[in-house]
Length: 367
Figure (tube, rainbow, N blue to C red):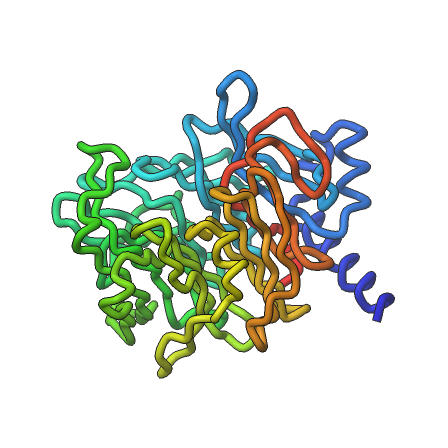
């Protein structure tokens, strides 16, 4: 089993090196090139440095920074295409830019500007073939979420949009076969005239929607029950069976203990995982990021509000790990378990003089 894991890691590392190309590797310093040659997985995360500058970094699994790209402002989530090697960093809500980076170095970064009366919600994903970029966006004057469609083969030209059949659309994913888009509609209305202020906490409409990727037609919409109306459905990931795991942030009273994580499949209702009370309390009603390790059948959660890192068994929902991680931020599947970052600069045990942002993308991922 161990030998098989090593072979798989080597294949994924070689895949990243092949994608990045000799030109990229030639730009690295000796320390960075050595770290890249030794790592079992490669990740990316947004950051802010000590001078207040923003960027996105490529990291080895041990936390060594391999490469950095400057950003004009703070980023949030990222989308990566293994098919093309393109990485896109999305501005934090209500930002109006995304930056597309060709990790092979064959093309200069492309800045994607939000359309008129739209801003980015901080997340997006690529079609499996890498030809289309999907971005979660706010049509703020209409008070509705949309999915922006961008042609990755034509300078990320915006070619249309689909409705998300909800408001406050946050995270966005796509099924492995590319046929379904999955939108986490957090249910919270915002408008850039009011910054990040939440305008409808008394009438939230959280939901999860499955959307036909070819037509934009609604396939399924799962609204949360009335008693959970203030439970914002924020982040999603897919497990090896194609089930959609979702993580929530509660906008109700602090002493409530609502369910914070659940899953569903096409044609099924939502199933909430009954976490132990001490785990729910420990997450402080706020899951900031979720990731699935498909190979090991695990689901990882982080909460910056309480500084917690929780691991669940994807088959049973049982809590396997529940520990304190100060300023816990991003999480992504790693060779063993998960890579976890923090706002105070830690990534997989190594500390950098930056504040890592809330999400991590796997570039040679262990799914």
